[in-house]
Image 1: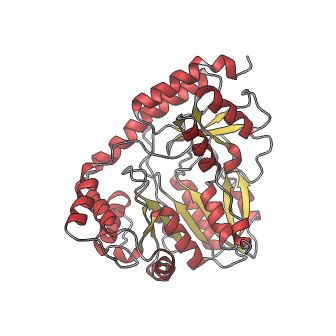
Image 2: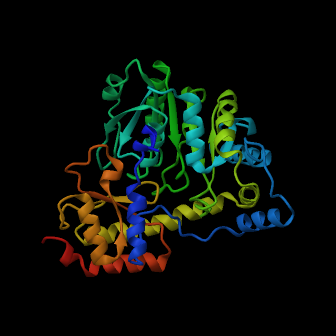
Length: 388
């Protein structure tokens, strides 16, 4: 037996690889996007009560209707989008939701435009279903899109544009004006916009997050992907969702049924209880707490000679590791791990051609004591790592 060609398109992610190395050293894992906040009690209690009361069987492949309704209610409360339960598909994590929607909207050979730095699982998912990818590089500090150039890159096979907002890994937060400009391009060229909004509540410095479905031109051409792994600290539960037009959600549900059948029934109940119980103040509190962590960690990186920007969103930061000893970005982060027992992700995970790019991604969503310990280690050995 031989593996399929499809398998050849999928490699172990650098995030997973660095997490394995970190675990071998019993180190501090700042490579993987684990949110180390405590899971809200209503979420835990909701799942526990569901299990104990016998809610342990299949749900509809669309997901629990009341959960879909609660997701729509939250979306309307934050962004006034006018969506209903019929616009929501609950799946096995945001990755499951994205795969289901991508398979229902894209055919083999269709071209999708992504912006670098990108999130690797987006690339792997699209490649696995036979899409052709076109990468447009964006640059720090604002990682803005050159819209005139974007227009020239749209061809007859272009079917969709994909953004991550706020961005993993760059921390970029798209403004309303940028989304309006994207919407005009999408509408003029009969495209679809996929907007991964997993980090919608991790936005800093008083910025207001704008969801893609809040833009008029994107209401009929947009797909929002999100989930609860980060905001509720339940990455292992795998409860995510997609929001789009009803007919698109109906089509995607067939894919969702084929691959996943349905998300875990009692865990959906836990998320539902969280949505019903937690006020907006909870989400604002998460943002405030992470802004403090961002400030501490970015300050530490700059003091240690690893320049980094104060990101506007998500809980990752890309640091300049050009001064760390090593032949390339991977060797540099491995040397960094050896010296500090802190794992980061080499930039090659976020660029299709990372040659000459000396960046590493750090996740600063750690418990306060662990984050402080990481900062202490970085500062204490910076002279050994960095050429002065």
